[in-house]
Amino acid sequence: MKIVVAGSGSWGCALAQVLCDNHVDVMVYGNNPAEINDINENHRNSKFFEDVELHHDLKATMDLNVFHDADVVLFVVPTIAIESVCKQIDPILTKKIIAVNASKGFHPQTNDRMSNVIRANISKEHLSSVVSLIGPSHAEEVVIRMLTTICAVSLNEEDAKTIQKLFSNDYLRVYRGDDEIGSETGVALKNAIAVASGVLYGLGYGDNTRAALITRGLAEMIRYGVAMGGRKETFMGMTGIGDLIVTCTSKHSRNFQAGYDIGKHNSAKYFWDNNTKTVEGVRTAKVVHDVAHEKGIDMPIIEEIYKVLYEDKDPKESAKDLMLRDLKHEMI
Image (tube, rainbow, N blue to C red):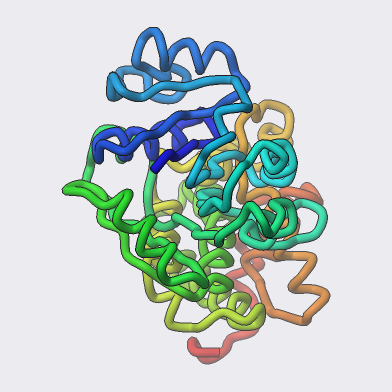
């Protein structure tokens, strides 16, 4: 079985190395010459992993023809690039692939989930199914083989089992799930909550505040996800509370770090002027804000982080306004 990883960034390399450890035929595809050369010549991806030596069997290429005879394609690129990458590789594919989505977010124009974006842009004759490989994980830890658990979520049970077996080993345990809507919504929405968590930390708030944000953030994730058609119990698992915790508390989280910069400067202006990384939570906050308004879903944390990001609201005022909302029962 031949697997191609579309994306030579941190998560793409980390997942590709898992496959190398599992003795699976894998090639990384990317469009950054420096990253590709670094992987092939130095067994490193220094841009993302400063002191990590990658598996010596891990190879990378900029040649699109690598997709020609692929059995499985992992999409590990920013959500804004998924559609274009699918359109590029579809004419090259020669058989039905299992498309593995490892990106967390929504389409910037249609607001659609990534599985649906892939289905819309890979022809039926080239697509067996879509499996989302998602959950509480940071590439920086997986690449040094720290114990991690994630989930293979798909409407196709057999393809989910295939991906589960391909990636599972003694440091990466993969579970299966079938609530595609709930899981993909959860891992996307938690990025926006993580931006809010970083803002609060940057403002100087502590553990009590973060615990409150995570708990109430989970309530919003459930409220939104169920309204979209997901199952409530999904948010009690790895693609819900698990991913929310790791992203809201970790130094590795770009979303948390972006929020921290905003809180530290008490303004989103610094972030907009200086950010050069993909921060999915910033786009997700806008998508969820807009959909929630359209469907009448109460999302106070998302509402406030949207105002901070897109309406230049003072972060301290947003925190204060959340605390002074009308008092209510916790389970509402």
